[in-house]
Image 1: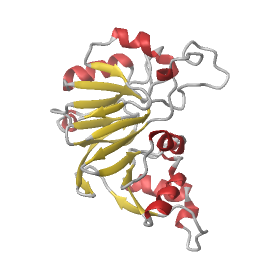
Image 2: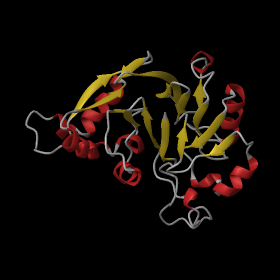
Image 3: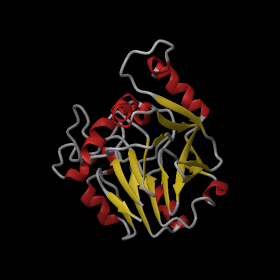
Length: 253
């Protein structure tokens, strides 16, 4: 199993228009973050979780030539806006791309990309097949996904566990019941937005505290704001089993 962090930033990530902070001026490639998304290659299948505005740039950079399905965590635009660019996979593969999400998220996608679902379709537009999921485990192309229900302020968001890997982005609360699904994970990718308290994301300290409860072998933080600080400096504060993620990082399990 191979997980690639396609993007580890946020819409308040880097570079910020008009911002002159040290992170936005950094020449360290690890401080240049596109919107949060991952690619999972497992059992010969290829999955992407979330298609943000930078989706096309991310898959071109990583050379992802095949896509078996897209799974969505929630409906915010920084996680859905790039969906139109799956049309290239339609062209290459010759069939509809399955997408998996909660009904609320599928409804939002059908509204935002109404032309994709129009009765009279323009030639060459994306072609997708909608699949509704909730909190029960489901299979995609023979691969089992276990949804993990978390809160992004008051918005329910899904994280996912695939084998010994768990992905939790855009959250500031997880119940003890849902946390039971995460225990035993070898590798965790977890939201850690910034140092200051935030309405809907874990702070750095909150994320570290959750890692100490879960105790995976390795954790990588994602959905990182430019407010968190320089990659090289923040990592010096962290224990060796916690690292900051960066765009293009590959994790082999």
